[in-house]
Image (cartoon, rainbow, N blue to C red; front, side):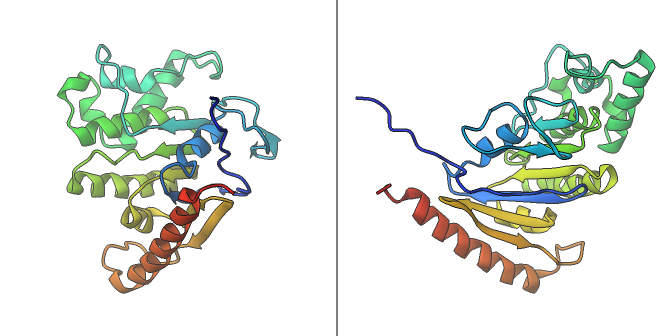
Length: 244
């Protein structure tokens, strides 16, 4: 008996602008992580196209960075060497040693880890490890930043710190940013827009026009949360329903 093929991301049409942070919500199986991997050039879509700066994406690009929930730090390298890891890969532009060091220093400074440059990964807390992973992405000076539930394993306080850091990083770098998250409150706090994926494409594309900082904007965020929860429940029902 063969496997039945199931298409995801049918009908998805999404643009993300420089300096914009868009969060992606959706039921399990809606294609959130697949969308990031397609945007990163790691997976070729069966149909449709991805365009970066007007050019069709045909593979990985040096100015597109992808980070995961697991920081994936190499235990035998120091923090600064982990941040530098990948800058010399084939698809990366060739950099002089001084430029590479300047990029690493700037990335560590951006995430507040200059003091930990020579630490081993085992000496880092969970939050520091995620900061190091974010710095590794920033060292590539990405124009597109893709994040797959990067704060899911962190405690509440550390998670809040990383959320504030992410907002600042996007503001400073002006990277077009896609954040996959399962946390509605996280999406509301950090995003310029929240997109809910479901069967048949985008179930909701919601602009979050609430002034920052948003932690105390309880009433405004509460109303938006109701809209997101409703869209999620409806999209989950459609996603889990049997295909006719």
